Image (cartoon, rainbow, N blue to C red; front, top):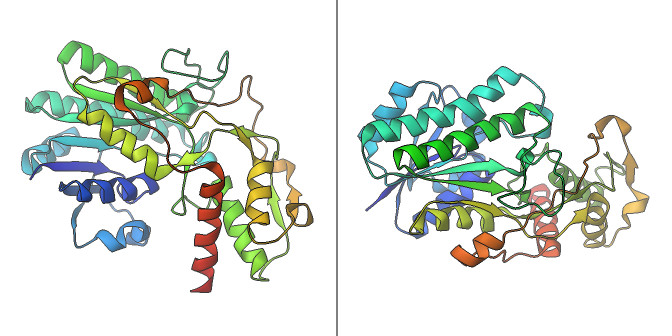
Length: 320
């Protein structure tokens, strides 16, 4: 039975990827940051009997080498990152370490091991930053505008170096926004779905948001982790954009979410200018043509289905 390592297994993407790999008969080893609070494992509690969970310091390269030697993985998925909007500018040194240098340490550990390990890095559409055009694909110039995107770009570039100079089978998954009921409460999509559930239950009457006209390419996280797995099953390594190619506004998300429970968003949504993000030169919209052509990857969950799924899950959570 082949083994796979997943860093950040307790996050949204890690939990869905673990489920997928278990279905594919992998032995799954999940990595969490040393000292991380056990209360942050709620996404994987249903998997605890089927996975091995260990804590690791991703900034200690000797420890990473020992993990590879001990578990002999055939695949490594690096999903650990400082990722929320609130962290885009906070503590740039830690962001550079976790989102940038940690990836180099994994790649060096793989190279030093001499093993035929396949590596997938969860890159981000934040690398496009001030993009010159929309939609964006794998050859669009990368112009990140915050420390998070800059650190991800560094990791993206180093991955290409190890692939080309050392022959490491390494793929970069350039992920556009992907959501689910397991999304963190600090992200706008989950703020909306949780707000709708609370308002429907009579626990609140208003929901404060920033720019309702902000546009995003939103997909379902389960589809995106499947794309990452497909990258490591291909004959040759490459970088791939994963996106739906559709743009929707925060206003549309609100409209679909509130109408799903028979409410009008205009009666409840209020604007908080303090949470607005800087405007973008071009909408953040992905072109996943390469993934369609080479991997036969396509999203399976529509925008409306995703919004309904999230609202239904939060209503269920409140009812419990």
